Image (tube, rainbow, N blue to C red; front, side, top):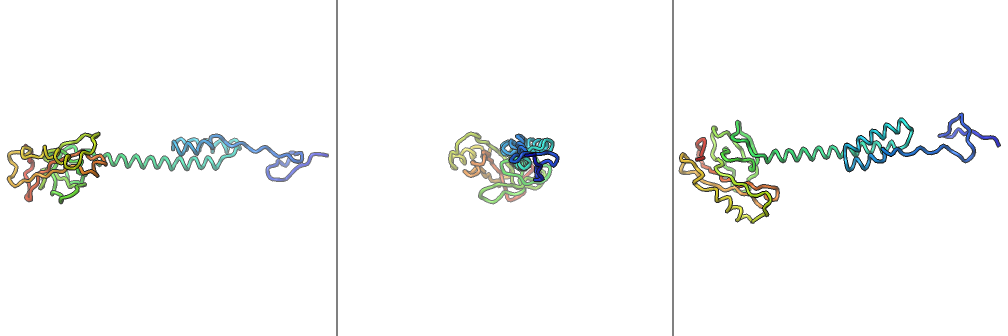
Length: 219
């Protein structure tokens, strides 16, 4: 029986095929397969493998285009998540970095950024303090940090009373200079249990008055 030709998809028209036989299925491109798990675990590596796999699928006629595209997409999503996480971490670190000294213009900062000598426009109300308005000490202000103590980063929470006592040790009239007004009061700011869990180890002694203060209360 002579060989017959087939016009079915996948058969070359100029080639004869024996009944029951068909062209071998192209193999799956290994780089395309590897791109998906690499994208999940290694982000940018998945993008690279997916792109290389896609190029080989086109050049060699192998299978795996969908896997290569999936590796690129997954790798891009994981990379974007990494970048977002790094940005959030960097912003958090910047928000906790101590001030370099006296500021040149009013700005709102986290309380843990205050340093010895920082001047505040006003003393915040009683209660938890997260952000404060820092002003140049040459400007009108009604509060100033006159002492600061930092507790150990690896310490276990000792209890609110113990923390308050430790901060109060540095919050005494001796921290004030000779030119401090008589009506200046001292306020202790210490970490709370909640802020301690977030890494707060800063204790401050703030001198405050209802009237504008001199440029510098420190002795």
